[in-house]
Structure formats: C-alpha cells, structure tokens
Length: 274
Ligand SMILES: NC(=O)c1ccc[n+]([C@@H]2O[C@H](COP(=O)([O-])OP(=O)(O)OC[C@H]3O[C@@H](n4cnc5c(N)ncnc54)[C@H](OP(=O)(O)O)[C@@H]3O)[C@@H](O)[C@H]2O)c1
Image 1 (cartoon, rainbow, N blue to C red):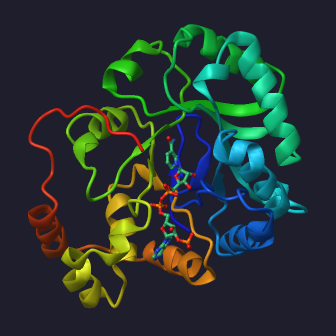
Image 2 (cartoon, protein in one colour; image 1 turned 180 degrees about the horizontal axis):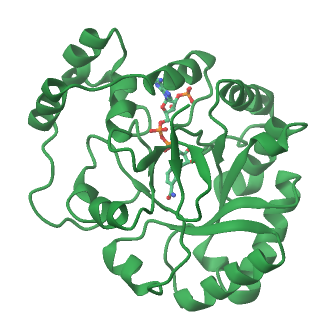
C-alpha cells in the first residue's frame, strides 16, 4: 500500500474507502459492511464517513466493518456545520463515537464552512483531542482563503475536496497551497460518483494499461503523491479494481492525453462541491 504522511507525521494509506449512500437501506447494510471489510483486507484501511451520511447510518455500517479490527483502521468522520459550535461539535462527536462503536475518531473534519466562527470549531476540536476522543482534526470543502483564515500554526491534517478529471479547478491554487505545507488533500468523488467509469475519453489510456476508465480516474487523482483518494464501492469487483488502480503509473504520454481531453484550469475557479 502506498502511503502519505500527515503533518503530524502519522502515515495513512493513499487509497481509502468512502461511505456516502451506505447505511440508507437496512437490507443492504451487510453487503456494504462486507465491501468495506474486503477493502480493509486489501489494505485500504482509511475509511471516510460522516454524521450526515444516512443520518448516521453510514457510521453504523463502519462499526460493523471494523468490528474486531478497530486498531487496523484509520477512521475519518465529519461534523456538520450546523453542529459545529463549541458544545455542538463535542455532542456530535459523542454521537458519532457511539454509532461507530469506538472510543476515538482518527481524523475529524468540519464537513464544510457554515455560520460558526472557525476559531470556535477549532476550540471544540482541541477539547476533543485533549479528551482523547479524536486523534487529529481537519477540514473539508475549504478553498485557499478558508485555509488561510485558519491560524498560521493550524493543526489541520487534511482538506477533503471534490477532485477528479472533470473537476480540476483546485489544481490551480488549492492543491499547490496544500502541497507546499505538506497538508494532504483528500479527493472525494474521485470517479465523479461513478460517471467517469463510462467516459469514452479514457478508453485509449485504459486499454494501454489493461485497466478500466474508473481505474485511470483514480490513478490520475493520486498521481501527485499528496492526494488521498476515497472512492466508494459496494460491489466487490469495484473494491478490487480500486485497489489495483494504486499500481497504475500514468506515463507522460497518458498525462498529455488527459490534459487534452480534460483541460487543467488556466485561472482561479471557485471551489466546487457536490
Ligand atoms: N466531504 C464531502 O463534502 C464529500 C462529498 C462527497 C463525497 N465524499 C466522500 O467521498 C467518497 C467518494 O465519493 P462518492 O461516493 O461521491 O463518489 P465516487 O467514489 O466517485 O463514486 C462512487 C460510485 O462509483 C462506483 N465505483 C466505485 N469503484 C468503481 C470502479 N472501480 N469501477 C466502476 N465504478 C466504480 C460505485 O459503485 P458501487 O458502489 O456500486 O460499487 C459508486 O456508484 C464518498 O463516499 C464520501 O465518503 C465527501
């Protein structure tokens, strides 16, 4: 498994697993937990979830997936901006811990910026760290100006943003900003919610690598070495394919072809969210 170092020095896998839309349907939960377990077996031991997903249902699926092997897993969860006050964050974290069936979240993110002053949410994260309920904190959907508003000595360990071949705006300024500070980006929706699996523009490169379009999309997202990708997959075949994508090395020729089909940004673009 390729890895990335967080600013704290902790090493995490470059490829993790998403959970959005898991936990929505009781009848699918066993299958979803099995997919996450397979991913863990294959080394994708970073799992991304949030209190928002299925109103806590996704965290319950994670609980099932990590049962008996919690120490192998790096759990990322997120607090909603509407809960991100000093007390609200701590209460939301307690609820998440209960649903996750664990005593600590490895990385706790502010899901996106809302009305609560950042300093208040950071104070809540600090209190949660001091209490041992979270090990690290970070942010999500933060643009450069939001990152700059965090204290210079901020302990933010990651910024999770929408990033894939069709959403390259962050390459202009945000990804370089993070890389300069050795703060990893986490690419969410790296397959554009599955849409890129059918993108014919990827067919030629995929054929050259004996891979699928989705695998090329993942290899692209992770190519810099400072981006953690967190695809969500329930089908076992997809879980295996995602793990294999980590071993694809895109050539200069591939990258030039991708630039022609999915042009990189020429100027600042406002941050996109799904
Ligand atoms: N911070 C935020 O605001 C934010 C926003 C969105 C997402 N996220 C996080 O990022 C994770 C990933 O993003 P996402 O779920 O939106 O989209 P995604 O990972 O880009 O796409 C998921 C879809 O792609 C399919 N898929 C996965 N691997 C595949 C493969 N190898 N070949 C073909 N199809 C494949 C999945 O199918 P099956 O499930 O049927 O296998 C699913 O339909 C989320 O689950 C969530 O944890 C965070």
